[in-house]
Image (cartoon, rainbow over the protein chains, first blue to last red):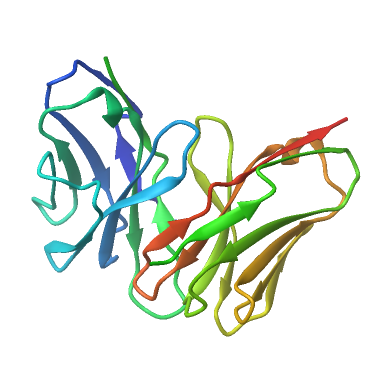
Amino acid sequence: EPEVTQTPSHQVTQMGQEVILRCVPISNHLYFYWYRQILGQKVEFLVSFYNNEISEKSEIFDDQFSVERPDGSNFTLKIRSTKLEDSAMYFCASFPPGQDEKLFFGSGTQLSVL
Amino acid sequence: KQEVTQIPAALSVPEGENLVLNCSFTDSAIYNLQWFRQDPGKGLTSLLLIQSSQREQTSGRLNASLDKSSGRSTLYIAASQPGDSATYLCASGTSYGKLTFGQGTILTVHP
């Protein structure tokens, strides 16, 4: 079965630094997502991306966050100036065309902000 | 705005017991309902997906049901095993793939 690939699996950064989380969605999928899960909390929706633009974003997704699909294959989440509270597991996901489909998740990037 | 709630928050059972995990959602106009398993520090493993037109789905020892009118879904695990120990998440889905997750139920099956 095709997979969504996320790199790196773990990222440690200093507070205030920029970090880029990378994802390679499944090639024929149309919608792309970032979710995050703070330790012990719910998996939360951050942003969805469709037709090369943001289609929906949550209140969490403020000006510190941005997403790009620079080359038609990679899908990145950038955090400009990381805060301690950005420490979480970040999941990328993609959704195929057609009916009765499901979201495919990557294995996640664990971000630790020190 | 869709809200998803799961009870109980944690459950501990002896091996071999049948068990039920509960999920409720506030907006009955869901497109689908999905159950996931999550092991500590790991990603999300999809277990079962129920479309809004379906009442239940089965996979091995797992059976998930959906009652849109009451805003509820249940995950039934038969003959539980220690390897079933994990956090189980339910999520309400839209037609374009966006999911709203519950808090999860932490299941421990002891030998």
